[in-house]
Every structure is written in structure tokens, then in C-alpha cells.
Image (cartoon, rainbow, N blue to C red; front, top):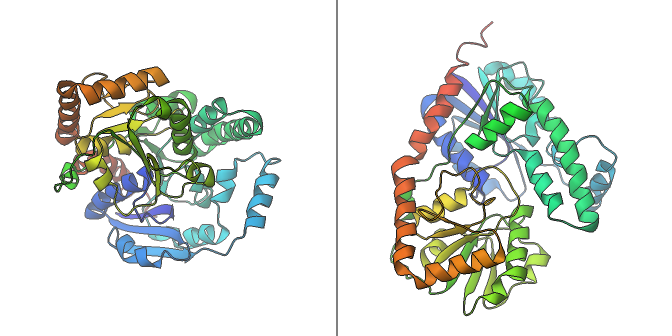
Length: 391
């Protein structure tokens, strides 16, 4: 079976949960099908073309047209009067749409990665699967609930627009694959999506073996793309509400593209790293992994990575949403500043608790969540569409 996978942006470097999830799924799909990938390439990303080609039979790419800041801010302003969310309009590219139309007859199935690029392929007359990494409107809802002033209004407008269009778009696809059982339930209940499934999160524990890096006592680690609003807001909230109540701890926010408001927080004991080539050295040296998320959606690859690296996790309820974890057994759930402070202190001071949480978490991901096993359900869904596009 011939499959075209639409990844609006290329998947390297692997610096976000969505990229990691898609890349590992594609590695498995490429073993089973004739797989092509189509993307838009930004200036400077040419070095990643060989890595993209390893994921598929053919990597098809279009070079992104030049943009400027004036056009960016104009589009944001114009979107205030649009019925569509900004991210949906921003991910549409007329040349990409045209190219997909031109080549679509070669394929038995098209897979769209994420909701917002869907305008590029919704009208294509080929069976289509939407890979839904999030319930997008929930992200906007939680963002506006945690903001004030003009930001609150901005996020509210995007929430309303996204909730309306998300139901419309998901129903245009022949099948929807979510990334957690909870997300699947929302799609079926609110969007009335009947042809739908979910695939769990995966991680390869062998990739997270410590090569001798020593633990740094009283070090706290949080990883993620810092240009994603839920992550940046989590760091700011941790800094304001929790960090200065800790005595002698060091916090590392590890991830790409921190904005100036985050960079201003950088100090010798509250470190904003920016992009790093490999997050694993930070996981290996960290004493405790914290997830202070208060908004967001999807599943949390960052938590499974920490578990594979044998670092105990303290997370908010939202931060661990969608994961098959048990509070007090393989993770500590803490939502208020006091609860998070107590959890960090207890793990630091109680080595028996520390080792129990870390060991149970490692066993959970090692025994149940290899990407090879996780991807079988995705492959089975694809096989539903074999021979359905024949004349």
C-alpha cells in the first residue's frame, strides 16, 4: 500500500514531543508500507534532508517562501476578524496544497499529522487519516483560563474558533487516531467521531541508559519546547510561585526557542538553556524531574523519557494527563505550590521513596511501551484502507 504522510514542517531536530512521536511511528510504518513524506522546508533545514529520507521511500519537500515580521503581525491583526483560528490559516500553503492535489492519485492513503495543516489536504479524493496529537481547543481553553487582560481575550477568541473548526475538520477525515484514551473519548463525545482509535505513547528505554553521568544533588529538570505557550507559562509559574521557596535547589528549563520573557529569568540557579542537541545528559544528572504544566493537551513524552532515564517525576494533574500512571507508585501528582514543594522535599530526603518511584516508573515504560508494540495499532488502522482507492 502506498501512503503519503503530510508533515507540515520537517521532523528534525527531534526537539518536541510531537516530532518524537511522529518520527517513531514513521519508522515503523516505513517497514510495512511504501511510504512518502511531504513537507515544507525552511531556510537552513537542508542539513536534515538525509534524516527525513531515512524515514520513508521518498521525501518530497517545498521550500518555504520568505516572510517578514510586518506580515506576521498584520496576519495576527487580520485574524481577529476571521472565523478561523490563526494556527489553521498559518499552516495553509497554496503551493503545498497544489502539490498534494497533483500527486494524490499515486496513493492509497493520506495521513495528516496534526489538525492545523488539514486545510492542505481536506479536499483530496483519497482516504485520509488525521493523526490528532492533541485536542487543540482544550489547549486554548486552558490558556485563556490561566491568563489575564488582553492575553485572556486573545486566547478566548482562539479557543472559540478552534472548538468550532476542530469538529468540522475531524469529521472530514475517514479515520482519526488520537494519542490517549482520554482524547479519544473527547473526540467521540464532543465531535461525534465514530471511526477513531488511539495509540499510546512510546519510548525506547535502551536509548536512555546513563553512560556514567553523576547526579547533581538538588537539581530539578523540566524539558520541552519553550516556544510552546503551556511550557513557557509553566516555567514562569514555577519561578514565581515555587522556586524561591526551595532552599539550595537549581532548576534547569531545557528546550528550544525561549522567548525574552523566559530568558530574563535566567540566573545561576535558574537556568534557561535554550536549544540543546541532546536532553539526555540533563535527565541523567537531574535529581528530580518536575512538570509544572497548568495547560496543554495530548500526551507527555517528556514524562516517559524521564522515567526511562530513572529520574522520579513530580507532575501536576494536567502535566500527566492521558498517561497510565499511579500517584505514589510511579509518579507523584502535585498541583498547588505547597504540594509541589512537599513532593520535591520528600523525594530529596527520603531515598526509599525516591528509589521506589524511579524503579516503578522505569518498569512501567520498559515492560509496556516500546514503539514497535505501540505502532501496531496504527498499522492496523492503515490496513483498513488497503485497496479502497482503486478505480
